[in-house]
Amino acid sequence: MFFEEILLYLAESAWALILHLSSGGSFPKPLKPDEEAELVNRMFAGDDAARDRLIEHNLRLVAHIAKKYSHSTDDTDDLISIGSIGLIKAVHTFKPEAGKLTTYASRCIENEIRMHLRAVKKLRTTSTMSDSVSRDREGNEVQQEDMENKKSEMKQILWNWGKAMERFRWKEEELERLQEVHELQKKVAGEGEYSKAEWEEVEKEYLSQRRRLRIEMVEILRQQAWTDKMICRLNMDEQAFVQMRFEKGYGFEYIGMKMHLSRATVFRMQNRVLEKICLLQEEDEAA
Picture: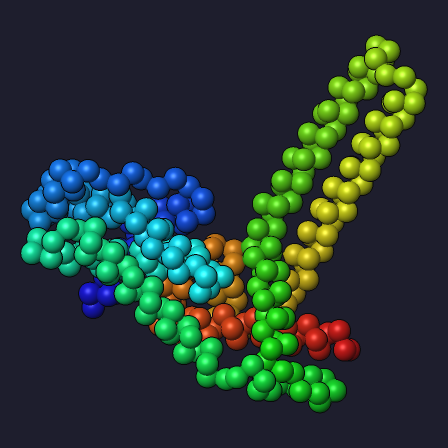
């Protein structure tokens, strides 16, 4: 019950901040010893705002510890969100006799991250890289190593899908800026600032850049439409997972809380979704 309350707290009070900070925002500065002591006393007196400040101002500690373990996974943001769970547990369970809050929190954060990494390792070692996981349309064995490479590529495609409209707007803005600069260049050219050869070179570069941007915009929409079609072939739970994970950017802990699943189950769901889309892609290519 305590763990569920912590997840709920993370979702309602700290999740937006953690997502922002793990995506490149600046972390609040660490507290001075006297500031920390004052907030701890206020927290024990029932001040929820003091508890929240203790969590927020120790997020830099979470990021520092998560960085130590980033070599073990390609999802550093997940390590930060998982480490944040450890931080919240630490603040909720801290007692003065435990010593300094930061020392106690460090142990809780590391324990949470290590527990996650052990669970991931256990899942990965359930099958060897040479085990066959399925067969393609012609009946040929699909090796685990090949599938892992394809799943890694598919994960990147899904991340791109989740940011498709944002990426498309960036390209639109880049195209608008290019056109604005070209209009200024035309004005300058009309005042005789360019020779004929110089203007031809400027015009050639403009047309080349405009063509490149338009091709990239079309490719974003094409890739988005293809990915939409693949996602529609997943079941409802898998579609909900894809939206929360790759469009909203939520971590496994939060998704598990929303879907009433364990973190390990959500991790397995991601593997299943990636593998399923890879196999659907192979079927379409073979058809």
